[in-house]
Image 1 (cartoon, one colour):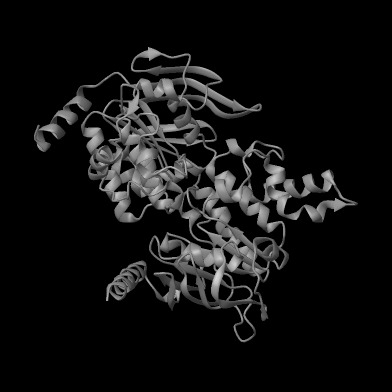
Image 2 (tube, one colour):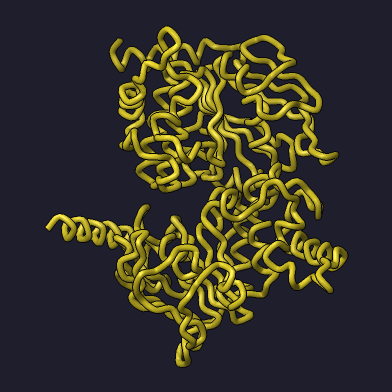
Length: 523
């Protein structure tokens, strides 16, 4: 079938389709007595890309997990391809043609890319695996426009590449309905555009995409229909063509979009004294090839670079999570040689990691121990933890960040990504750190949570701490930082003043530096 004919056929099918392929009617959901969905009714039609948006905790990911079979309903009806379902779990959903791609990656680190993509759907003959995963993966990768080594282990990949593996897992299942929960949160602009092209191809073949995203520009670009949720309820469902970014924000948060700009920048710091943090000639076996940077008290400094530039590796080396093989780090003028996470905490350093679920939280524990774990000695007397003082501090930080649900002993594994991020942030503010390293602090969080995190950054700088901010969103660094360093090929390549620099200028500079690095590597 010719491409044009295929598109026309898909469009005609969408126009003629009247019965939803997935329908939720009066669906509610509670966790430990806390209601997270209230009387939700949504129809998802064949051959459409349907966006689900809302603040963290609004219930959109919960809707996706109910459709995918990962959560059961507390009440209400779920119709799948015209039939009411009672028993519903991921294997049953997959058997009926419903697949889910999770925001928090579900890969097996020790398995290869190909093994992860086809896990559970391997081809076999007479009881033996056929071993055709590489060929099948090549077809999917060509369709998606991704270029990954099939033999590479998933655990060795960057977060962005792991996200691509998750996307290909969903494509491999040839589902008629695919729930995509924040699929572009770690992708570059070009990679996100490529994914949107894949989504359109699937839609035009009659597939339904349920697209959960905090990137409103992405939603408006690719979605046919948008449902806005707030506080566990549906606010409205409308054609995407009838919405604007401002109208969606207003519906999500219940106030005008003008209220979500970056907070005022703290005063310029005094840089005449000794830097609070100084890094010179840092080199590691993880790819850092020469990092030089300085932070003064009360200063917010950004690290900007393309995916794979080495930003995270620099941060981990400073904090002591990765060992360095050369260079020097000083804290308040004192050489800090034998770095480790424990000794960094003792010296007043804090680091919010890029991957909150794997590196920032203990998912088997509740909110309270997740906040207080690095600081238990502050609550101990004669070897026993003072539970009342611990609960009081946890409560203060839950209120400070607006964690929802606001229970001290809430099950953090069931919280939305943004509320989990607030818990991680609360963990580090409790220790009153003097140097805070933030690696993608607003990744996968909604506008309201992002605003609170941005306010925390400014408040922390105003009390005299130094902030090292890493973000893939260049606008975020330019909106929050006093200064920023550019990073390419594991090196700090230069410095910019955000107030005097545009996003386009930064992007041009980063790609120019990346090209120079590649040319130097092949010379």
